[in-house]
Length: 176
Image 1 (tube, rainbow, N blue to C red):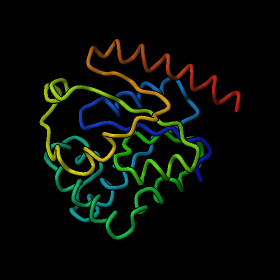
Image 2: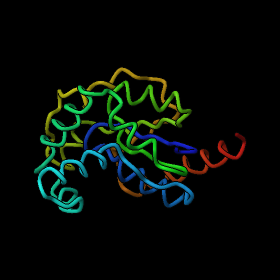
Image 3: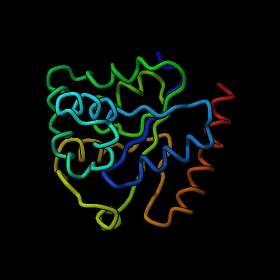
Image 4: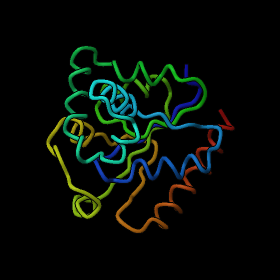
């Protein structure tokens, strides 16, 4: 069972994974485990693909991954969360996408972070797929994030903002 949890949310190509990597560089006692990782592993087992192959060609498999994620959630709304929360130690979950996932992690006292980037910026970073899917829009109206990272600028700005955030989180966790 996870000890301390940090979750990130944001639309596709907002920079969630990049922000998570920066957090991991600064919070070395945390490890990354994503809900999407669990989906990719299961999809790979079904299709005979490696995790690395799916990761390398994410855009090609994105719609199938969305479909599998939604299918399992329709069978058990907490299916992916249960897989991730079983991880021991401190975890960063970089891909919380729907309200139930957010609620579950909040109940587990997770620190919540939203990564924001404009549609224009996200479209420059990659091909946007399934923009009206629940996994893209369900958290649009949530305003009570512990932290919000604005990522419409350079990598260096994201790195500076996220590194500062990591210092704040470290300080907060020490006080707990």
